[in-house]
Image (tube, rainbow, N blue to C red):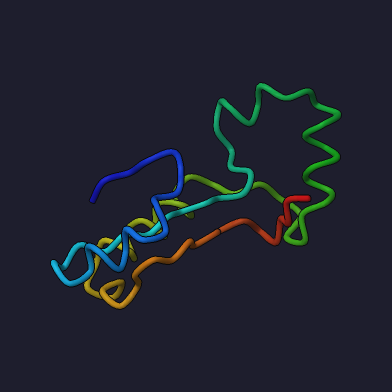
Length: 91
């Protein structure tokens, strides 16, 4: 499994799937990491209040998505963007 910061080219999945290479993307919402906590407390409070689940994600929750895609259970996912985001909707 290869990870990238930007979503792969949309055609990547149709080109690679016949070779058993599945191209998917994970686009998480706000997750409790050092990067998130670089924001001001006011921003963090406001953002958390906007999330339907009322909290930020945790890295194991995002890792579970990667594990799904890397497992046999994820073998039918191709060309998808999974977004574990607590209901966050970017505007």
